[in-house]
Length: 437
Image 1: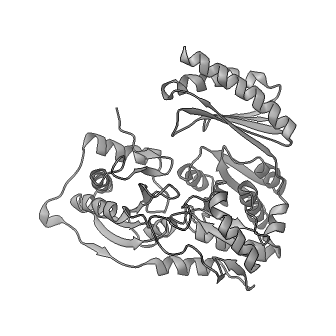
Image 2 (image 1 turned 90 degrees about the vertical axis):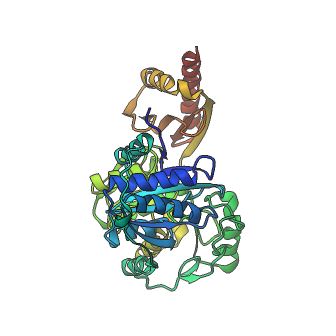
Image 3 (image 1 turned 45 degrees about the vertical axis):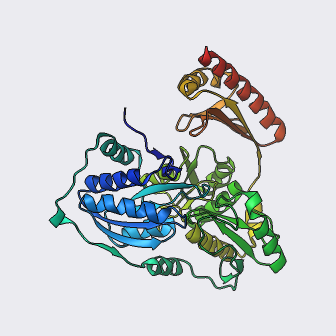
């Protein structure tokens, strides 16, 4: 059986348990084999294990005949951008993004800045699993160089965004930076963008009377924002407000998001002659759909936004600058910008389910769950089972990391949300019992 290494965002695991230096070397050698010794750029985040894993990956790449340029410590979106900008055949980022410090990961990028998709990931997995490595002779080893190319990324953002106002931003234009010292132990706050870890930033924004506060995750590919009142803006509404701005600006266009994002996207985008395309969860799938549909924008509510006119990797730094540009274009505060988007009632539940029973449960649900609702407007099976109903929706999907079936419901009011959840939860529990017999 083919060994699965990749999850929704690269190879990810606890250092020296799931992700070892030996595995990193094998992935590097597999990438060199897959690209036929192509040119590769590589960078890493602040984690204490990242330089070690980077060196291991470089050893594999050189052993397979690749020419390697190291970009040192760098945000993930900058690495993806520079993969294209420097004309490399592939890019490698050593990062576990928002995971705790004991985790690390390896993310691979194509020459056009898109992350490796599932077929490409399976090619790498096949090479690693079957040890189909192509090694070179000693005299054919290509050079490994190190260069600081981050100025190219910074210059590209400066060229993309022209701000006229003097914004007072906590981590932004007139900058008040907090927790900005690279430290792989993340002593200031968790690298995840969670409300609890952002309390200090909210307080600073309010105290300094800043226009906006911006927080990035551990590798800079996600961002969330705090409004001028010191309040964390709702993630779905922030995504939708910016997407609506772009669709208005372009007089239409496609916006890509995931099956779990709020229906407020359709409510705002469709009256503007735009269209929403939904994919399975993960920036790899979103980026692929953005490219194939020639979308004007793509994003997940977690703060991973993709701007195809610049590159195809989620980019927190670019997103925050473009959001400021949108606020300036519309002459609105952040709170006013977000307030135009409706906020609906969302419920989440989970039901224990053995991993080996998940496929049987989902098959049972696909047959029986839609029959329980009088009007199903759309049925999607791109990531679990998503039913679009009159005034709401229901998503049932197997967890990719835990022995659980997850249920998400959104409706225009709490009463309808509770009603949909009661029906959905009851059927999931029945399906799990049947599958476990």
